[in-house]
Image (tube, rainbow over all chains, first blue to last red; front, side, top):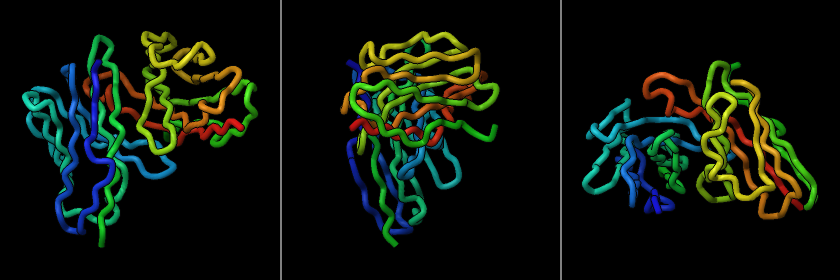
Length: 112
Length: 116
């Protein structure tokens, strides 16, 4: 069955460093991958979308890659700040009506 | 409206009672999604509406769960004979048609359901 996984439940990094989060998918080929941010007690907020034929997408301090050979997306936050601390969710879009499947999330903690 | 709204924000109910959760999407958004998020877990897809039709109901956990949508506006998720395992945050999201923005989901704040 198709599966999307985020390997790390939690990631702690020092302020100013680059945070890298991983999302892997198996048994299917999504047309798009997305990344969302979720703060405690709130709904997820859309950050970036990347198509299967795009290698990389950037938005301010955020960068997303899509590697169809490795079946993986990496999400980078450069010059991380304590305000970046949150749970980050990846989501895939696939199928006839473009079904969205979410990973379980990685909780990022940026330490001052 | 400014964003997706959901009501109630919190609901405590006794096991066996029925509950109805409401979602008001962003005006003009044709797609509407319901998800369930248990404590510390990811989002579990429940159902998707395109307009008032539901092409995918595959995520509904049992026949106790049902959802409907009026046109391209309000949606209600109904859980009958609630069980303790139904306790979770129920999130609603909407998205518009047109280009890749149709995949950008705007989420409401969720309804926290507690079944005692």
